Length: 200
Length: 227
Length: 197
Image (cartoon, rainbow over all chains, first blue to last red; front, side, top):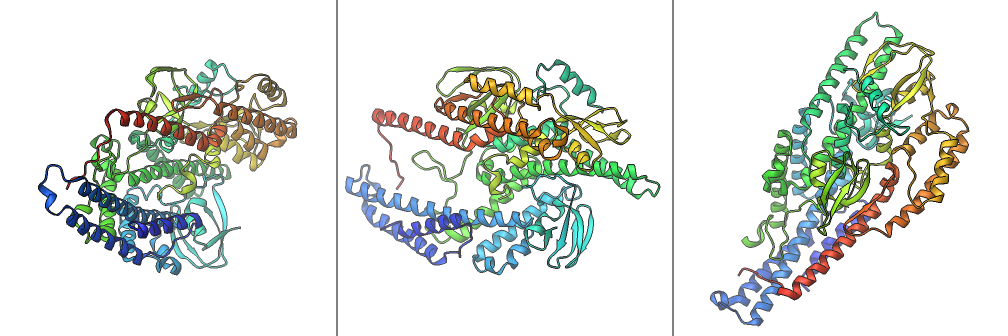
């Protein structure tokens, strides 16, 4: 039945959202949906056939061609929805990491689930955000955390994994494993999220 | 500027035991931007960029940072002074958080409705120049992505991303202005046109659940706020 | 996306607390401090035993460092809350409470319970108030349609809790309204299915 492959993509998207995990890019099914679209296109052409110039094509032709059109629209819609869903998830991950693209890519689990186009998109998106961010970076970092409004100025953190020298809004800090620092929460939110630091 | 006198003036006229947030007198830039931040969070579409407020607060942050720098680098600074610096810095983190969150909700909506923005000059004027550039570039990026990953190689007539469909719907996502929003009136609003044609008067300080479309203009004119 | 998922339905309780923390509250500072310029405005000078009005976040900060005592707001006491509760249970309308009373009460009970008279009684009254008002909101739902609903004297946290369901319900009413209008149009003129060849 037309649209079965497209439904697989939609179910992938739903499962991904329900389990809050990124699934592997379903390259094979995407190919099948695209193939079906080409088939539908040639089906329409052969259905219309000589009727292209007719002012009122016969009801049979109208009906069949409408049917194919609806199938085409549905497939395209599902195809785009699937890709849009994946991009939204990836953007979520990007922002959750504090705008640290290497962190998203270095996660082996994530990397192998991405399509090459998604990698390209993320690189491009990162450039855009860097550009927007750079205008204000001296005063504030738009990629810092916004889920926890600041209460205490400082939080005490312990370095769990070396993260090297980090530029913060308040200066440069060399985070070495085992050391403790009093830092502003927004400075290190992303390091907390990524597991380099933990709250004491 | 000293705002403590303004706060006392408000308190004197207020008939309740607490501050009336809907009063205009003595509203600081901070209070105003807080209101626009929450407006932005509640509104389905993008509101006008509050250039003046953001600029003022960024300037203030800069001034405070300079002050802090000055005090900290002075060896004669007393312990009391250091303590004041902590208070100043604590407030700075709050203001940074506010501006950051305000910018982020707008980026979120700008990216979500990038296609819609590019199509509507009336919406483009609501964005800052940085945001408009971002919207344009993001739309290009996402279009390129959809083309290369999904649409390329398909028959010509299937490759569009901004088609208007026969049943009236558009491929481009538009903000849902019929979504319900909670509003509080900052002044008395008369002759508010409801979806069924009736007219409503919203008393100052009252709270209503209405479709966004009903109050869109009132929000833009700061006559009501979204809560 | 730039706005994390948990923030999309509306402000979080943390954010509401953040906003409420800008409200002014009276403190009795235990130390001297010169006038200090903050972005909010000018703070101080502090001259104990004189009192001073400061934003709540600042009061909390000082209180946690044992540098002040907090003067409870006029409404945060057993007598006032008991009156409100009596009103609440005897009338279908919502009684008038400060818009951000829940947030402010929570913060003060957390850090300055020793500055409040009978904090446990206050906690229990707040709980009773919350429950009385919640059940009234459910009644308010009956009046909801696709056009508008007035919700006089509802407070910040309450609205935030009701928001997802009420907005969704209004959305369903709106859809039913639009659909029924659409059907009426259909019967009038018939739908146009016009695909280009």
